[in-house]
Amino acid sequence: METLARKLVRYALSCEYARQPIRRADIAQKVLGTNGRQFKQVFGEAQLMLQHTFGMEMTELPIKEKITLQQRRGW
Image (cartoon, rainbow, N blue to C red; front, side):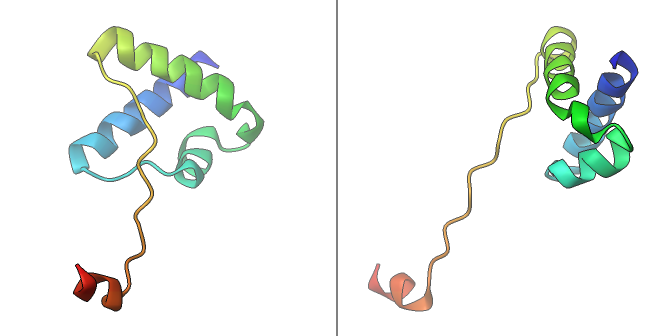
Protein backbone atom coordinates (compact mmCIF):
# COMPACT_ATOMS: atom_id res chain seq x y z
CA MET A 1 0.00 0.00 0.00
CA GLU A 2 2.90 2.36 0.65
CA THR A 3 4.06 2.06 -2.96
CA LEU A 4 0.57 2.95 -4.18
CA ALA A 5 0.54 5.98 -1.88
CA ARG A 6 3.93 7.04 -3.27
CA LYS A 7 2.60 6.71 -6.80
CA LEU A 8 -0.40 8.86 -5.87
CA VAL A 9 1.87 11.53 -4.34
CA ARG A 10 3.99 11.54 -7.49
CA TYR A 11 0.85 11.81 -9.64
CA ALA A 12 -0.52 14.65 -7.49
CA LEU A 13 2.73 16.58 -7.76
CA SER A 14 2.82 16.16 -11.53
CA CYS A 15 -0.78 17.36 -11.82
CA GLU A 16 0.04 20.35 -9.62
CA TYR A 17 3.00 21.26 -11.80
CA ALA A 18 0.85 21.01 -14.94
CA ARG A 19 -2.05 22.83 -13.20
CA GLN A 20 -4.47 20.02 -14.00
CA PRO A 21 -7.23 18.80 -11.70
CA ILE A 22 -6.85 15.33 -10.20
CA ARG A 23 -9.81 13.14 -11.04
CA ARG A 24 -10.76 10.03 -9.11
CA ALA A 25 -11.15 8.09 -12.34
CA ASP A 26 -7.61 9.06 -13.37
CA ILE A 27 -6.28 7.94 -9.98
CA ALA A 28 -8.05 4.60 -10.33
CA GLN A 29 -6.70 4.10 -13.83
CA LYS A 30 -3.14 5.42 -13.57
CA VAL A 31 -2.23 4.74 -9.94
CA LEU A 32 -4.36 2.00 -8.44
CA GLY A 33 -4.88 -0.26 -11.44
CA THR A 34 -6.46 -3.47 -10.16
CA ASN A 35 -6.41 -2.29 -6.53
CA GLY A 36 -9.37 0.07 -6.92
CA ARG A 37 -10.95 -1.08 -3.66
CA GLN A 38 -8.13 0.46 -1.61
CA PHE A 39 -8.78 4.05 -2.70
CA LYS A 40 -9.60 5.48 0.75
CA GLN A 41 -6.62 3.87 2.44
CA VAL A 42 -4.17 4.89 -0.27
CA PHE A 43 -5.60 8.42 -0.45
CA GLY A 44 -5.30 8.86 3.32
CA GLU A 45 -1.71 7.71 3.40
CA ALA A 46 -0.85 9.92 0.40
CA GLN A 47 -2.41 12.90 2.20
CA LEU A 48 -0.17 12.25 5.21
CA MET A 49 2.90 11.99 2.98
CA LEU A 50 2.04 15.23 1.18
CA GLN A 51 1.41 17.10 4.43
CA HIS A 52 4.52 15.83 6.17
CA THR A 53 6.95 16.14 3.26
CA PHE A 54 5.69 19.09 1.19
CA GLY A 55 3.20 20.88 3.45
CA MET A 56 0.48 20.33 0.84
CA GLU A 57 -2.86 18.57 0.83
CA MET A 58 -5.38 17.50 -1.76
CA THR A 59 -8.81 19.09 -1.40
CA GLU A 60 -11.98 18.78 -3.38
CA LEU A 61 -12.57 21.51 -5.93
CA PRO A 62 -15.83 23.45 -5.68
CA ILE A 63 -18.44 22.57 -8.26
CA LYS A 64 -18.84 25.12 -11.01
CA GLU A 65 -22.23 26.79 -11.02
CA LYS A 66 -24.16 26.55 -14.22
CA ILE A 67 -25.22 30.08 -15.07
CA THR A 68 -27.52 30.62 -18.01
CA LEU A 69 -27.27 33.54 -20.38
CA GLN A 70 -30.41 35.14 -18.89
CA GLN A 71 -28.92 35.00 -15.41
CA ARG A 72 -25.76 36.69 -16.67
CA ARG A 73 -27.76 39.50 -18.22
CA GLY A 74 -29.76 39.94 -15.03
CA TRP A 75 -26.66 40.73 -13.03
